[in-house]
Image 1 (cartoon, rainbow, N blue to C red):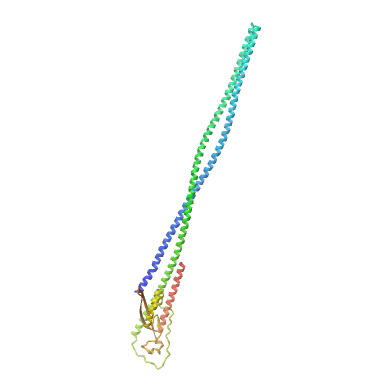
Image 2: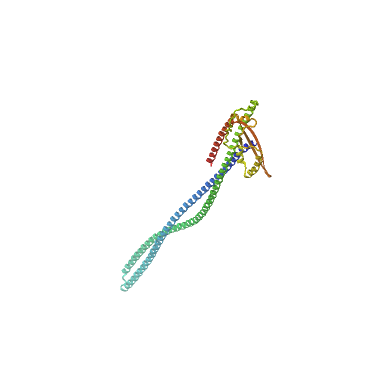
Length: 427
């Protein structure tokens, strides 16, 4: 029953360790995948923010270029407006000079007319005094007067026509310049409004840029802190994974030791079963007969049985016994020594029932005593239960069995070394 329970425990322990290892490994893998996913998401958000910043920078550069072009147009319009003001002032000066010239011509004409009238009147008075009867002179003067008036009217009309023509030209030029100035003023006002709107938009873009830069700095700081924490978590998980691997390797080594113990126990049980079956067939086949003591004395030779490996009980005691159990076992060992029981050893003396076997080395028997100890630890102390099974077999059969046990032990050691190698490669 104990062997079956040990087998079940040995079968369950590695499966449980493997399940725990697989479960923890799956959790670590899922956590690592989540970390990679979060890292990719953060990288994607960072790329989006960088794209937005680049787009805003391009827009800012475009607005700055438009502003520079607008300022250049405004400077050109201001220059044109200055030139138009100069042209307007020149035209106003020309108009004023023309008005002065017209007034001067009118004054001169009036003075000439008045002089002519005075001369005519004076000549008429003198002519009347000289010859009142000479009416032909009066007629001549009238004709002269009418001619002078006609010439003066004609000259005045020509001057007025020239003045009106020049005035209309100057008025048209002033109107054109006024329209150009008005359109320039309208354009300047429009450009000023656009400049104000662009300035407001530029200020808003600057505010957005500053806020985005602050958000980017916050995101970078948070990303760096998250990355450092995740790296620490990964490092901690790696350490835990290494510890789990070492723990798993230790469990595998313990399992291999238990498996080796089980194999050794199975070998011992098979050997003892074979010994028991051989003893039963030996007793059932040969009847009892009294051995006659021969006169020839032969020298007694001890059996050639060599114990090359530890027995199962020693392995079990080494794997299961704790330091406290060893002390309790030492106390119980003193009582076992008083009973003269041979434990885990070979009795090389011949059997007492058949003293004639000393003469025949081939018929010598080997007494093998197998002791199984079950240790139970309680609150009051330890209890030791000892069971012994004695089997007899010839030296040759024992040597064959020991050779088989040696081969099995070598196979077991080879399998154990291969298992340890596999565990080392896994680590």
